[in-house]
Amino acid sequence: MSIDWRSIQSSLNRNFTTSVQATKERLGRVGQDEITELPQEYKDLEARVDALRQAHLTLLKITKVYESEAYDYPSQIQESIVELSASVGHNITSFAATNLKGTRLQAAAPAAPTAPPAPVHKTLPHALVRAAVGAATELQNATPNSPGEPLAAALGMYAQGMEKIANARVDQDQAIRLNYLHPWQQTLTTSIAVAMKARQAVRTSRLELDGAKQTLKSAGPAKQEHARLAVENAEDDLVQKTEVAIALMEKVLKNPEPIKHLNELAKAQLIYFSHAAETLSNTQAELEELSMTAEEHNR
Image (cartoon, rainbow, N blue to C red; front, side, top):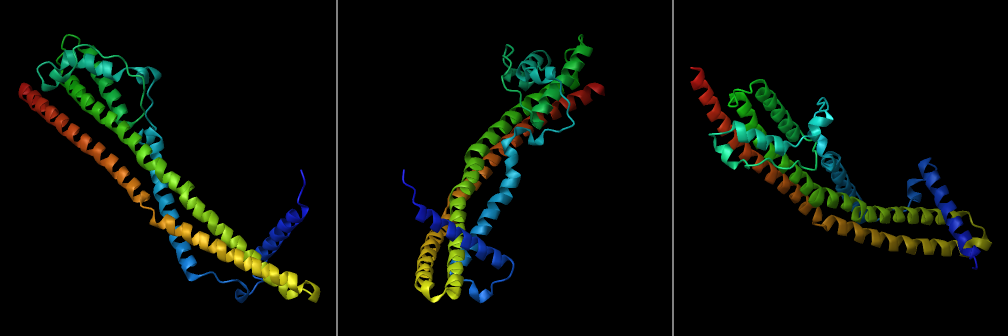
């Protein structure tokens, strides 16, 4: 393989010139009139793209919690391996079969215990289900001769309703991750990142141009022509890269996908909260009926 040493040397020279120019500007050794002014259209687009990128990052900082389902799982809960491995469905079904006779919930319960589910979810709704089932079981075991113990029955009703909400929570999180979170992050790492890279190319080209201008100022008669050609080439390069960056930034700003993704976030939340509200309404009605029955028996 033949090595193009001339091309390598030219690239090294440009990189050195760019680095020197950037250092001078950072140290304030270059006058403002010696820095090439970029088009106002370009600078306006830069500001808008920066705002768009920051908007994505701001919302992503909060919504990244959906990557882990345990975002509402209290850290102080210390559930044992046995508790987490227990089949919630099995416990609720078995409990309902013996403690919810005569209620409307009893008819919805399967006749036989279900098989233990494979996943063990660490969410607040799932923790509430396990806690309610565990508390009901303790009451049931303490009063084996009184299977219709009112509080145990109430806990079973609550656990049944909360289990539906827990499952809906898992569905919501999966929908948010698939339809909002992943596309939202992809926008940051693709189209916005490409526009930012094009802007960096513009900055580098502008530094090369200003460095070439400084070289032209200090060039002797023998190097004047070469330095002038370098300035012209740098000017052409800056114009080309600026046009490319403008096109990419405009494309990013006109992209309708972020609004679509945000809509998916709201849609998943709406489905979950609507289902949760309906389930809690039905559960609360059953609990209120049981509460009134218990008060009547007490009187």
